[in-house]
Image (cartoon, rainbow, N blue to C red):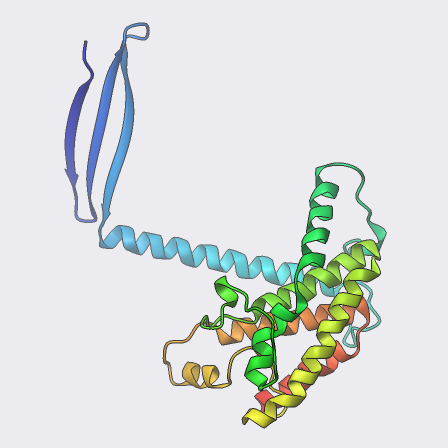
Length: 259
């Protein structure tokens, strides 16, 4: 018996659904085994539901981020000047107290190490130097770090955090040395920024004009997000690697933001 194809049309105030069902008889089961494909045209009600789901996901992610930050801050760290007023009953293990044994997690960490050590620091710094008017012969990165992408610069912050965490986890000086060198270069770049007309202390891979576009409600891609990632990476370098300059740089940036 040849397969039968049926076409059903459903409609409601919120959506119109077009379902195509291919049915093939299953003699051993006594019923038709169906392969179903749905083509959905979403109406106003479903769009509203979809937006609500996005909001819920965003709230969950923000809450998770706050919990992770809180866990990190409750660790005993002499470099944190403002201590919690609430007695801490539990805190996470320090990364230095945990070592991975042979297995898939250690394999993944070793691959991460190879990747981090293989990244060209000058390519990460390229658009920072260009923005500050400093010479750079490095080949620009692509993707979200491409010279014409407004999100450029955030990956350097992620890289600093990754190196700081890897150093704290393993004690391998190669990660601290590489990240320390980047912090030193960022300090030089920050000092050069005023020569291009930027406020003293400003540091990014894009011009300050991006923030003016935020204030004017003009289209721009997440400058505050990018600055946050850069500062987060520097903060990790201070807290986990003891790099004092990594704290001085964002302090200088905060003075630029108050001008």
